[in-house]
Length: 537
View (cartoon, rainbow, N blue to C red):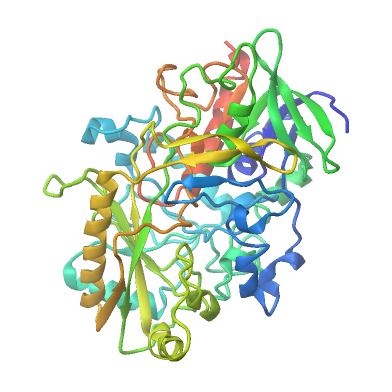
C-alpha cells in the first residue's frame, strides 16, 4: 500500500474517530483512517437471522476473549472483577452498544472544586454544550427537553415510548418523590435523515437491522466516505513512529495480509478507546520515550475507570413486556447522582430502568452476569412465572480515578500479529462499594413502591462484563506532570499527536460516556482548526 504522507491519520473508525474526521471535513485536509476490524454490511448483522440470540455468545459477543476473531486482540483481566468489552469493526463498539445517550453533568467537570476528589477537567459543560448538540443532530438523538438534572437542551427527536415497564417504574419513583426522566437515546423515535424509526425489535447489540440505532457506520461514515475520507479496514496499527525532532511521523501497521507497512502523516490521532489507546502508546517505545510515547508523566495506562454495575429486579403481578423496545433506553433516575454529605460516599450513581432481554439471553444470565438460571422444573417456573413479570433497575456507579487501576502490556499474551495484549489490573474501591450498597437498597425501595411483590438480585457483586465504558487512561489537563494531553487533546510531549477517545476523561461521571466522547472529538477537531496557524508551537 502507498505510504504517501497524509495530513491527518486517525487510528480507529469508531465513535470518536468518525466524529473527529467529520469535524475536519471543511478543511480540505487529506484524512486517512486505519481500522483493525472489517467493514460489516447490514446484511451480515445477526439481528437479521432467526437464531440471532446465539450470536451473543459467539462471533457477536461483546467480549473479544469470547469472539476470538482475527481482528480482535485478547485482554488479560485475571486481576480485575470487571473485564473490558469492545467490538472491532468500522463503527467500533457503536455497532453493539445499546445507545443510551445521557450527557455528563456540569458537576462532573468540577469534582475537585465541588467535592475534593479527582481533578477538575480543563474544559467544562458549557464549552462542550454546542458540540453535544451538533453530535445529537448528526447521530439522531431522541429525548424529552426539560430534564431538571441538566441545563436546558433540546434533543432533535421526541423521546422513545416508555413502554409498560417504564411507566410502571416511573410510578414508583413518583410515589417516593424521586427524580426520573425518559432516557435520551441515540435511537430514532421517528424517521430521520433517510433512516427508519425504531421497530422495538430489541436486538440493539447485534447490529440494528433497520438502521434506527445510531452506530457510526450508518451515520458518520457514509458522509465521510462521500466527502473523500480514505478508510482502510482490516489494518492493525502496531506502533507510532517518531522523527528526529520528536514529532510523530506516522505509524507502522499490519495490512489485511499481515504484512508490516508504514504510513506517514502530519498529524496522528488516536481513537482506539480507553484500553486500545494506552496499549498502542505503551507499545510505541523509543530512545526518547522508553516507557511509551508521550508518557513522561508516567500516567499512560493509569487511572482506568469503568462504571461498576449491579442490578435489582422486581417481580410484578402483571406482565411487564420488558422484551419490547430498546434494551437500555426507557427511564433513568438521577436522584442520587450528586454528592450528599449525609451519605457515607462522595459523588453518586444513577438508577437505570432495564428492559428485559429476549428469553434465551435471560435464561443464560443476561448481559454482564452470565449465570444461567436453574434447569428442570425450576427453569420452567422461572420462565413462566418470573421472566414475563419482571422489571429491573441497574445501579450505574461513578468510578473515581486511581493510579493503581491500570492498563499495561502483558508479558506473554499477544494478538495474531504478535503485538502485546493489554493486561488489566483493577479493584473496586470502598467508595464505590458503599455506592453499590446504597444503590441496591434504593432500587429495591423503588421497585416495591412501583408495585413489585418481591425483589431479587443484588448481593453487592459487580457484573463481570460491565467493562463497556473505558475511561481515564490518558487523561487531559493543563499540567504536563499530572496529565497526558492538554485541554484540546494534544499530547503534552508530542505536539502533533492527539487523542480523542474516552481515555482522555478526567472523571467518569455515572452515565454512559459515548455522547461525551463524541462531543469531545468534535471539540478537539474544531480546536485544531482554530489553532491551525500555530498548531505545533
